[in-house]
Length: 112
Image 1 (tube, rainbow, N blue to C red):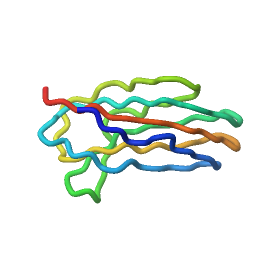
Image 2 (cartoon, rainbow, N blue to C red; image 1 turned 180 degrees about the horizontal axis):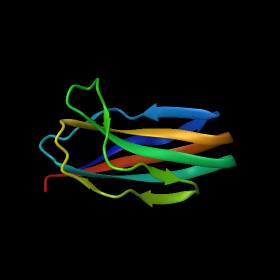
Image 3 (cartoon, rainbow, N blue to C red; image 1 turned 180 degrees about the vertical axis):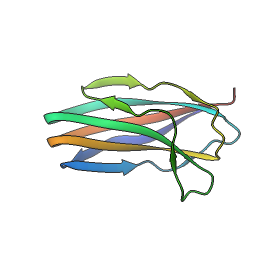
Image 4 (cartoon, one colour; image 1 turned 120 degrees about the vertical axis):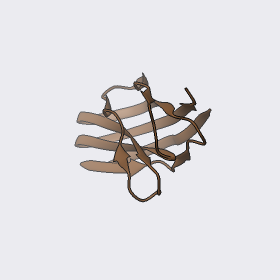
């Protein structure tokens, strides 16, 4: 099932992080997120995208490796299987010198 996470989220600053709303896995044990970088500027800008999982919606643990986006366009992250928690979310962190970005993201979940 596909779930939108961010729609044209604007980020700017030296280092700025945002997290999506939690998504219930509802029995799914695998997920894959996609990122559409609509706009990106600044000196050496980079958006780190990290899938996180939780059972209690308070304590979040990184799942897999972060996906770094450094250019405008579409990026499909590596699929993550073996998810054991009840919820996932996406954490994005913008770095660089005076970076600005606009990003859209979504998440696919599946029971494998």
